[in-house]
Image (tube, rainbow, N blue to C red; front, side):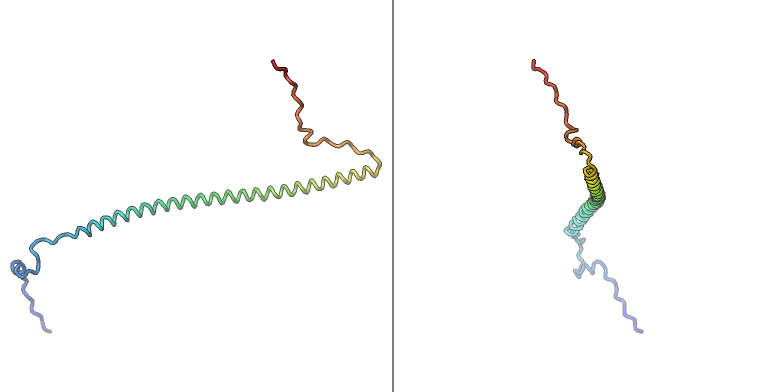
Length: 135
């Protein structure tokens, strides 16, 4: 093995005379420092806006879920109302058929027709108000 010879470390006077290192302190790259600070501010602003939009999105998701629940409830009510209406229509048809059957039996037996029942409109009419003479 061969060892390399170690060169002596140059003194400050030797470095200055060679011109390898400047005597004054190097300047800071202020443009990079300012750019870094602006980048930090930009990241903070973007992070804040992102958090705000995420919260808003969560609120909208909750509202959408609530709207879907309400829509499902209304759809269920509509289906139930349709079923009730169908049932009522079926009952009305059966009652009408039963009434016509009874009327036909009465006519066949020779019994007079009963007087028709008052209609719903006639039953809800209000009596006329008496006029009050003008003073």
